[in-house]
Image 1 (cartoon, one colour):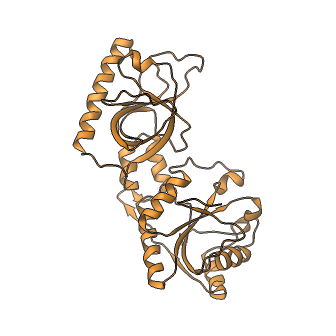
Image 2 (cartoon, rainbow, N blue to C red):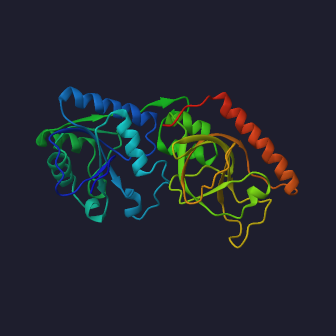
Image 3 (cartoon, rainbow, N blue to C red):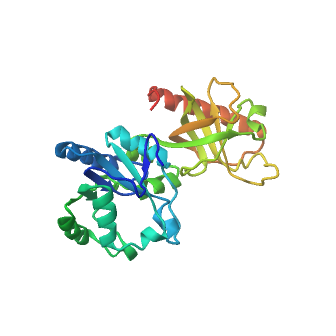
Length: 318
């Protein structure tokens, strides 16, 4: 089963030699981008395809642990990887059977036979096989027998330490979307389908699109300046994430909502999928004394968001 962006590995998958990086690559942050550029260039030098090997679902969810929230969907991850010039994004279903494979079987069947690996690029903490029995030395030893080399990719760091998906999730959990953007090399992006809400925003003069079915990690509750892809159009806007403490919700109680107001826009969006880039946090969510104070604050938030987005220019669709 395939996709324009990625390919599920099955029993029939065969690559005629490859340089392959193994990892989750969630977020495809600046550290990942450096690794992927190296894989691309190493493959060109060897005259073989470049690829990444990733797993879905997240191994933690199969092994009885909580999987971390996703920074990127599989499709978005593949899109970002391919944009760097890596030719193939290969996805292997992670299940109990795979988790119980020995390191030798994993290397022989998947890396050597299926991927035709000539060079395998991994992180310095890479473990593989049943109960994580295989380590770097195991992989190198198997590679000598099976015909592939092994490289450890260098971790990129900034002033806050090594770049990692964990650090980005931590920043988002505090609402620090600008910090997350700096590590990602682009804004954190979420996508959702517009659902019918309670029309509260329209009553206040600020109609909002209520987003559901969001797969990516949401940042902390608050108000954010955003850019939104609507079809082939890019619009500026302001987004509220939270429980709307000033306006008592209906039958759902204080259920969190994701509401985006698009500037200078008044079209019916119900059922459409919007893509939202979170640019900068404006403030915490808080409760106001009433609707008049809330409406005044929304005007301030919108003006603040316009100023932020205007200062950054208009990047176009990406």
